[in-house]
Image 1 (cartoon, rainbow, N blue to C red):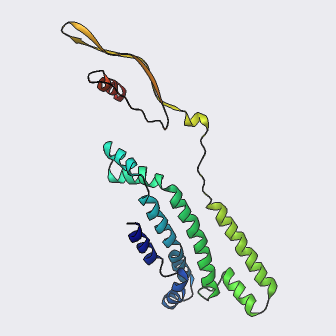
Image 2: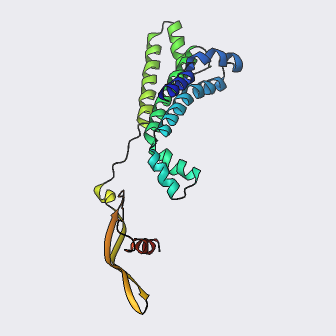
Image 3: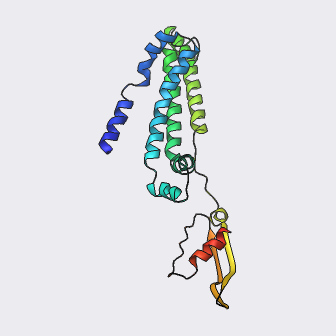
Length: 219
């Protein structure tokens, strides 16, 4: 299975984005449409590969929990799978953004556009205008740094108060039933707290009140 996945990814990345520039220029000319198509080719590949890799690494236990709670396929995708693979998706966004910037500059230098920083550097190179070339290089570096800052997604570090937030609290819960003119106490003075990101398991022998307690919590 890992070999087959690696082979599929090699096939997907067999043609570099720069190789599409001459063909797209022949089809669509040197206008802005060609640059848009070239950017799509240069950026879409990284995003698709990273999203695919991230979704394939989602722990099956999380999906099984969603199945237990009768989650629909759409809910399992958008509320379990995608949030669990955000690191890989954001890594793909960063990679694709830098690749798109590189590809559009290369396209402008190769004549796929009528304007742009890449074309400016090419004209400076042809006319031996060193200040023009250096100005274009500085502009490229500034835009690249700005894109890197914008796409630098980080996990939000929750404070201890948010991490320890109580989401369920029971105090002195009791429940009894009348059985043959006698009150049978099933749940007697139960108190507990469940905090955020905690996993609670209620264990006990049969007929000890577990189901009654769950029904009380469920309302």
